[in-house]
Every structure is written in C-alpha cells, then in structure tokens.
Amino acid sequence: MRLSGPFRPMRDGLAGLALAGLVLSPVSTAQAQDDNSISIIRDTEIEHTLHEEMDPVFLAAGLDPKAVRLNLVSSPEVQAFAAGGEQIFIYSGLILQTKTPNQLIGVLAHETGHIAGGHLAREGDLEHQAIGTMLLSVGLGILTALAGAPGAGASLIFSSGYFGELNALAYTREQESRADQAAATYLERAGLSGRGLVSFMDYFRYQEVFDDSRKYPYFRDHPLWDDRIEALAVRVKQLPHYNQVDSPHAIAAFETMKAKLEGFVDGAGQVYQDYPQANQSFPARYARAISLYRQTEPEAALKAVDALIADQPRDPYLWELKGQILFDSGHTKEAAAAHGRSVELDPNAPLLLVNDAQALVAVGDPTSLAQAELDLGRSLAAEPDNLLAWRLLSEDYDGEKRPGMARLAAAEQNFYLGQLLEARTFAFNARKLFEKGTPEWRRATDIILASKPTPQQLQALGGGG
Image (tube, rainbow, N blue to C red; front, side, top):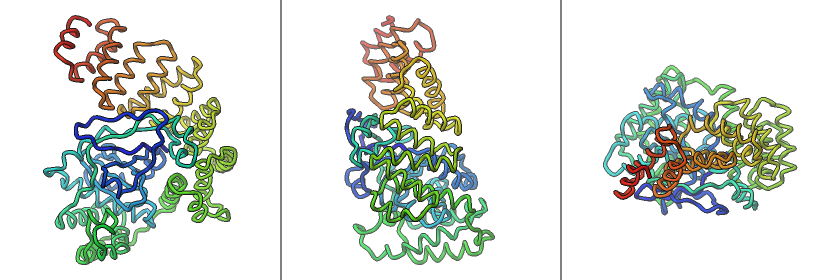
C-alpha cells in the first residue's frame, strides 16, 4: 500500500516537493474541505478488487474500464465523488461503512452515472479536471510513520501531492435522480442487483435531519430525500436481477479489502477489537499482521505474514507486504527477494514492479541495478506519471554510471511533477551528454521546449547549447 501526503491545491497546477524526512499523515474530509488537501492511497490489491467489482458496470455504462481511474482517499469520512477525466474518488471510510460488495458497487455505479451522464462538464469544474496525471505513488510504509516509526516512513517518502481543488460536486436533484436510474440500468446490464444502493441510501436516510455541518460529506453533496429513495426502490425491485446475491469470491475479496484498509488506517486497539485473536479467518489474520507492521514489530509481523503465506503461497500481495516489512527494517536483499516473488506472481502490476525496483536499487550491485532498470521501464510503460518510478530510475542510472540517462530521468520526474524550471535544467544538462539526434537527445529537447523556455534559452537550444 502506498499513501501519499496531503494533496494541496495550487491554482497554477504546479506541484510542491516535500523534503526527505517529512512525516505526512492522512487528513479528514472536513479538513480537506477547509484546506483542499487529501491523501491518496495506492494499493495494487485494493485497486484490483475495486476494478474487478466495477469493470462490468463501466462496460454497461459504455465506458472503457481501463480509462476509468479509481482513486482511494485515506479518510474516515463516508464520501465518494466523480471528477473530470473519468475518475472516481473513493474514501476509505465509505468502503469500511458499506456492509456488502453490492452496497459499494451500487454507490460507485451512481458515481458512474454522473460520469456517463456528462454531469461534470459545467462552469467552475475545470479545476477538478486538472488531476488526470497528478496522482503520486509515494513510498509504501508511510503509515508506519504514524505508528511511531518516522524513520521507516520517511525513508520512502518522495514528494507531497498536488492538483486542482477537489471539493466534491454538488449535483442538482435532477442529476441525482438521473444518476440513480442510470446506476440501476448499469447494474442490471451487468447482471447485478440494485438492492445494495437502495439499502445504503435507506441506512443513511437519517442524515437528512442533520444540518450540513453534521452530515457526512457524501450526503451534503448527494442529498437524500424520501421520494428519491422510493423511486429508486420501486425501479430496482422490478428488475430481473433484484434478488441476485454477491458471489462467495466477491464477498471474500471485499472482506479482505476492508481488513487491509483497517489494518493500515486504524489504530491497533480498533483492529484488535474488530479482529480479535479468536478470529482466525484470513481477513482477520491479515489485518492483525498489518497492524503489527504498523506498530513497528517486524519480527512478529513477519511471523504472522509467513503463516499467511504458508496458507496462500501464491498470493502476490502477501509477498509484497513481507517485502515491505523487510525493507523498512533494513533487510534490503531479503526484501528484494520477497518483492521479486510478488512480481513473479503478478508480473503486470506497475506498483509491484516499483516496489521490487526500490529494493533492488537499495541493494545496489550491478545485477540488481540492471533488474531494477527493467522493472522501472515496465512500470513506466503502464504508468508514465509515476514520480517515484522516475526518481528510482534516476538513482538506478546514477548507480550504473550513466549520468546522461540519470539527468534525463530526473527531468522526466520534475516535468510530471510540474516543476518546469528544474525539469528544464536537468534536460539541458542531459542533452549535453547525448549525441545529437539520438532518441534521448530528442526527448531532452522535447522537455526543454515544453517547459516554457525563455527566448535566450531557445536561442541557446538552437545553437546546440
């Protein structure tokens, strides 16, 4: 799991770079509304589960599942919202509050209705569309810093976040009703029941009696009213798949996702209350293992994870967790082996490749650096805006004594970060080290031209400088 620091709005779209050693923490939705900052979690397992549940709905809505970006926000608030660029922001509190996969799918189907219905294209919402490529993948383990291990967390922090303002959109009653009905249609087309969305709304119906300051953000932005709930209930009860139930696989994946989230975002007391030692289910053991990791008890955490791996040896996310525990406790070679196993089991996951590369770069021998370069190249081919990957690639090239490529990777990193001055400086320095006309020379030139150079810099560029 990777958690960014707070994303802070910057009207010019440029990003701020955090200094190494800065300990970042999640912020609540209320705080996010006050200072427009949120914390984004990246986790391969959770993203896989969410897409597995939602991709049939996206297809039913006429959307390309690969084009829809699901962003997980670290916050206890019950909240979700759609944004420009076919993005949905899902707060961890929403996942933890939903009782079944069908409830969560229903809420996200409603947000899909806003995207497919074009409800985002309205005046004043352009800032919401500035976030397309601006999500950061920062060091896994930052949450350990919150558990009293700032060294472990800070060692992986790359940069704090950025993008345009992310206040959730307040839709009209007509748009809400249309999104409800669209959700019912998409769920039916996907062979799913709309019952979960209705039950979710019904459960939180009492929110209507609160003033806005006491409502969950979701119900400030998506207000409930009796006739809306009743209209949706009447519709979904008439659909053929109303009595469709969640599959055992969906339930297991949903419970595992909730346990993983709780292990990372809640304190040990809450974790052990919800998952007592007597509960020997996989999700409960997973949550407790993560909690031990967060409490900086690496030996106990490794013992718990190894027991899980013994039961499910082909689970790449257990190997990922083991690799992170080892990495944070300074066992880089063992961490690289564990992360390498996670990549073997899920070879096309960009974040797992970055984890492996991070450990390999820390090992630092020629064989490890060569493998790290391959990992990062594959990761960046899938996610070219992954800033941690660009930073690690720059370190990798530096370790291989390839200064031109190291500077070019640093230029890419700063360009995606929005630091145009730094990007231009690195690109100029890289360009001098490449033979004219090579692909690397041309890419450095492209970055310079795209970084708003001064007339004098353009003149130097034309003169071969």
